Length: 235
Image (tube, rainbow, N blue to C red; front, side, top):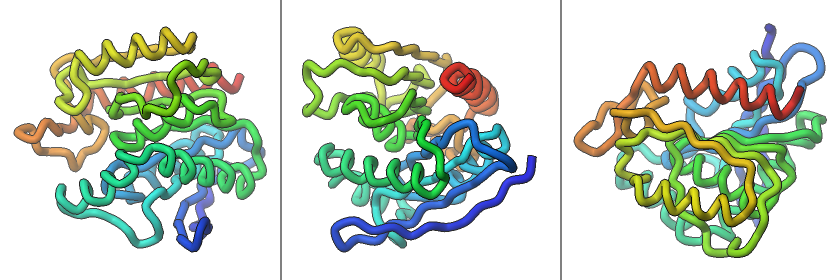
């Protein structure tokens, strides 16, 4: 399927953000926003937007840090992520903006979201505050609750794709997440991959001592599951 891409600058509160929109030939089945990992918007997320377009969706790789704000080292990535990870309301506002831009630029109102690592946390928050999405899929995402959604009921469907040996989302974190989702009456599912660490979809993740390791099998399985999940949302 033919795919076209363009870069889109958008603004909020005097801050410019940069997103990438990938469009399929013909009318998209829906628009899927892609939330980036802790380093910021990169070729990885752009490629996922293009993959979504190849599946027949509009893919929009959004930005929550700001144009040109990207991390290279672990320390730089942590410094970019921490202000939003510790202020989830501010993060949620930026995610809401990205979703609005995705719908406007694609011309499609039906939407879902996928995210990776910090982006997994981001899309789970989109579901937690009931943004206008049909579902979200988190790949090796951080699972902790934001603290501003206690007692809320979740309307969107949730898919969590998780490496069981991920030190950033431990089995205790998984159990806490399960209790949170059940209390919210969510339609949720979790696929855990054994002997699999954090960042398992990223071929550049080769830091097993840091708990980050690419897994070709988990990568393949997780995207097959995600494709099926999106097909269920947008029949």
